[in-house]
Length: 323
Image 1 (cartoon, rainbow, N blue to C red):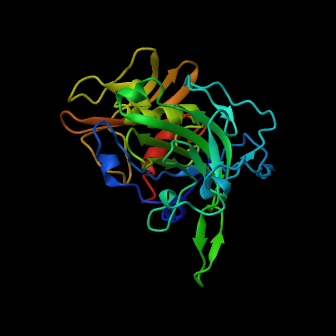
Image 2 (tube, one colour):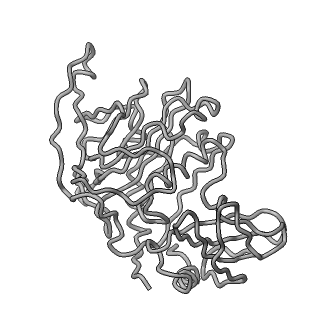
Image 3 (cartoon, rainbow, N blue to C red):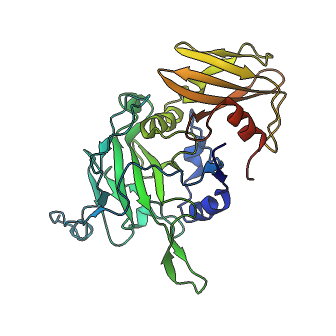
């Protein structure tokens, strides 16, 4: 079995430094924002770039206002020509900040903060993407909501892979910076801004928590905003409202499955099944939970990323969560 390490507490500590997001954004129709802590494999951060190779910031042309005059280009991480594996998503991933209109500032703008905290990125009131001065962008996706964004009321959307060491406070109360224990400081961030609003809402996640496919992760986050089926819902579903047997969605093959599995200290449900599936040449494992009748939900895990094979996945599920 692939070794795992418990980074839940460390991730929580890091997320404590992230600006809280207004609750009304999470409660908006068709949006689900659920921060889930999972065990991840040791050293599981993506090995797609040469760590620590940063492009120095360059000054942008000065604007007319004092804030624009203090802007500069954000740091990016050199990709070294490494090509990511084929994605299950059609979203276009670009190196660095790609086509996105981005900027950074040495000081944190007030609109990027809440209660004095900030994340690796935020959407500025004018719709541009601001990158925190301590962050460096690895890859990006411009407008992941695409054409469906307008109908959903989304004016601006971005997704980035970023190396970020969030400012923290040491025991003496002085600012300090330290990487998340057990990772190389790489995060995935997706942000959205509604038409007529200047607030940013979205999510921050740990790469490899359930997939190594950055574009697929971004598409999955976008599905919640657009009120569309998430990736796991496109893989399998229970045969009916009371069945424990899983049925494949179109284009998906169920390799094997098991019902009534041990889920350790996870929340318990009347129906708990697992399956190994194949989709377009990729292997995923699914944990399916359902009430005795009706409501059900599904969690995907990429094969070879979180677990090695079906037996490994059964053990992973039985080990429960770190909470």
